[in-house]
Image (cartoon, rainbow, N blue to C red; front, side, top):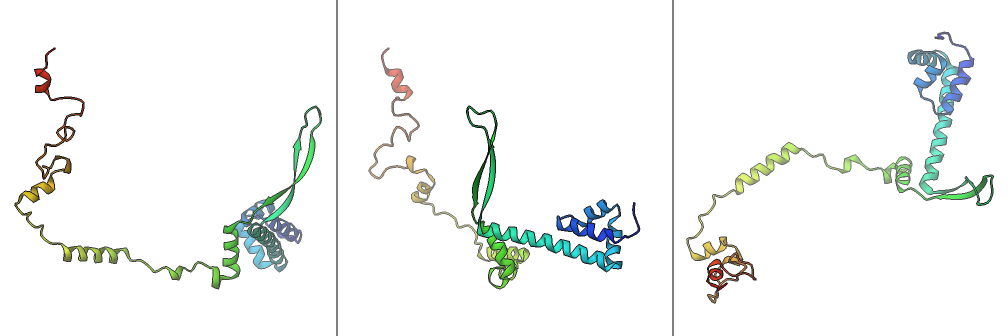
Length: 196
């Protein structure tokens, strides 16, 4: 592992940062540990400036890409195709339109204009679950009444009987379906009375 700093490392670090390399990757490529990389940044101003400049360029490139994604863009693309009857493939150039992405636009605006677009965490009230549960339990306890005795009338009994089995006001017999028999069949006693 190389532990001594040379000024050439500043140029290498800047190119790596420009290409989006992390501190761990830069240290690995330079053959040093990450702590040595951080020490070099503190001891050598040129090395620290090169790392900052490279990362700023990478950040600018990502910012441009995010902006393009937020507003949509059209790009040139190429496709290799083989035509019927031709042995050699042909490269066809065409345009691709990438529509605007709403999430990218919201993110862009939240960073650039936070007073308008940032999702304020303060807007949502802090919820204390324990207090809500205690309040609900107190409400239920205060409003809990002893179950009233059902009145002993025929109406109370009828209320517990399913509607299909209740007696009809005109005393008409319940339908065969309500009595448990299918409409096409007769009862057993009636079936036994038939002659074969």
